[in-house]
Length: 250
Image (cartoon, rainbow, N blue to C red; front, side, top):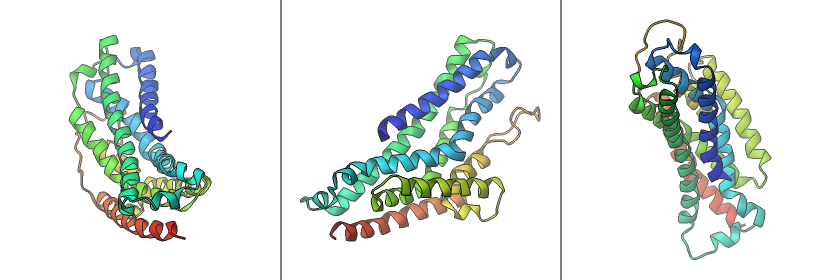
């Protein structure tokens, strides 16, 4: 379930945007290529950064550990002649991979569907501008901004057998993060669940489609919120191992 959600979510969202742009192409014929790309990619990034990415991480983190919870096999798993650190790290690595896969697919599908629009609707000027490199940097920063959330939710999914507790904590924290980032609170960068939205706000122009001229695109990859995200990810990952190790032998 975690794997297919990581694959289908970017496909469905990008496909819906593709259909929307295709069906309203006559209204976009006069829009420059760079603005078309910003509107197309920005709509996807806005949804991902504000709500979907944190909630996807909640689901992925739980799905990685749900089998052991349902079968009550944690003690059996940790009793195998395999280093406990290896078991813990392997599960985290798989969750890490699923989040990375999802965001990589967002890049590929965004570029692919944008170029497909320029082929099917030649009046749309998607082919006048290339933002593959910029988009890859934006999603790389979005991925780094999500690692703190991933470590926290991964630990919660290990500690709680049911889905409601980690989901409830993750959803509440996500809403709080959106509010803190949306109101530009100066200390929002210290709250991991604000990081995806802070990333989107810092990388995309706020005046897309408002006729304010051609924006300049730049991505500052390592900002203070990214350093906090990476720090939280490492610290919670290490602490989580010792917490789960103690729990597994009870």
